[in-house]
Length: 336
Ligand SMILES: Cc1ncc(COP(=O)(O)O)c(C=O)c1O
View 1: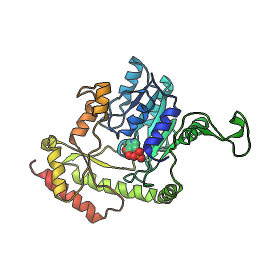
View 2 (view 1 turned 90 degrees about the vertical axis):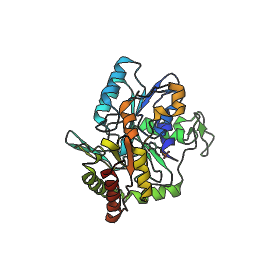
View 3 (view 1 turned 180 degrees about the horizontal axis):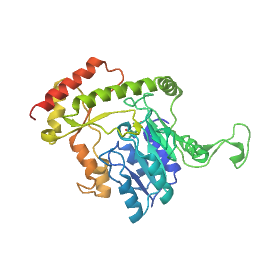
View 4 (view 1 turned 30 degrees about the vertical axis):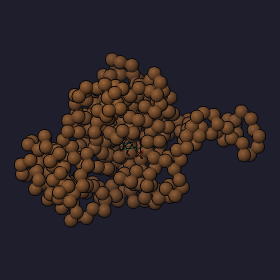
């Protein structure tokens, strides 16, 4: 696909969701996870994340399904590359009949164990579909690019069709046959194709995936050790091996209320931090339509109020990592 947003859009359409239906994404994600649902005309509703994974709170989702109109689609984001509890979500999808779409944009290379077996995020071992983004900051990149993955042939055919103008070329599926050139448009699709040049770059990057994920985890271990007494480290559940697309530190103690100052001091030290994410339900577009009051999703909002993402990329040298560690420790050891 041309990008991860296009992938989410066609995956949502392929799930059959549309006006009158409800789709549930996590509020702690990039806008596209929710927008993919909104493009279809369906209503977007959110369910909070849990503080132990920063992924969808499955108990809250189960409660929502039991009490209100069950969603037709759930977009579960592997936040920062930490796998959602996909086996449990998949079980819930079976019980309530929703399509489970894993937004694995952060999680190419992430793994989880379930009942003694290893599964890869995006592999659809426990999801109907998964999407990836190959945006420049992702674990691998095509410049821009995305992908939908599924093990379901019918979904795959629908996704391919939607991504290419809704065009059908298979002889047995056409209403007539004018000749070998003939094809038909069966639905209103899009031009969401990635170029061959970009795909070639992606294929070559895939060869380095394992090495890059290993290096990301090494850096995360160094950060975790260095910051253990100063801030809350990103989640790293026991049964998982995350690809760690981002390293999200959550400030605590006296610094909890001073993220802005911490951010500026890092900039002054020549280090570029980021914030992932402004909760999607607080964006003016969604506020105007859904009217969520502050405090609607307290864990996502609390995470936003005190999170800062630190530099994390495989080509960081040990000296680069030390420089970030020294700067963070110096700032957090002092007063705001
Ligand atoms: C979780 C998540 N989903 C979807 C996207 C959208 O991907 P793209 O930028 O390739 O459209 C992104 C980021 O870019 C993302 O972080």
